[in-house]
Length: 409
Image (cartoon, rainbow, N blue to C red):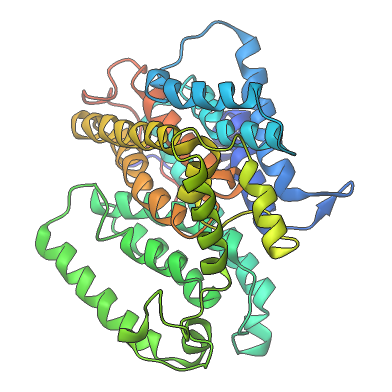
């Protein structure tokens, strides 16, 4: 017999959600909406406010954390040492932004949520997805105009949408069929924005999810994505985005093709690559790449390739340390996901799968510094998954039988 959940009980349950979780979800949505507050970009508050709340949470007691700090300690050490000797402008802020998601993940792992609490978190992610869709519709004026603009400026929404796609893909693979609809709704955002890596990352988040899924189903999704993607490629909006001439074929998508629109990335990356060769192993110092990009572009500050940024700033050694931390973290999450039960299993698989999307975005964007749009939510998911291990009889063992708390959508 199902027990009816009153509205007051639902609200009471949401009030028990930790302030850090609220801070991450709300600040991420506000950062996507954009604008300024007190003369500063809201996206700046988007990483600073959750980071501050995470740090304050450590003052409330010596409660242990379950986040695998050892995995990231080598990378943290690299960032700290390079910052101590840094002389580049804005290096301190950039270093803090690099480490902010890790601090949030550490703090989130101290939040002990049972299966009902984790279900509430997933419901909040769905609410967040709905809010993101509303923002996209508002910014594009799609409902009133009925047409899509050729330039949208929806990069924040695309990046945030990609981590939500990862969560919904993992949830769907583990039996929550309704989350396939949420995945599809969010995966449309990069199509509206016509962001090339965003389209690739969001689309591949389902067939490449590390959550268990039959090979035949993965291949079917890949085939559908390939057919739809090829058709979408020859639309006018994509052709304008892909080629300077406004038209081209799929086989012409080559880096050395002068007609292939790289949005200036090729010029920036070539210059950054030359600089890497001057000091390949130890790099030029924290945030040194910003001055180079600013000089080349007369205004931009990011190279839109985080792997080149890391190699230029921290050298091959620092980049290898970072890459090994990502791999180690992915393996640990995947191993724990296979042993976990309940909703924590969704979060463990989502955390592991998010690293694939993270690495993809690093190839053409600045996601490593976009804590407000990606990193904060990514490591909140990871931290909550680890925190669930500490709940008695939960995580790796069947959860205690309790009254199911579900919110109907």
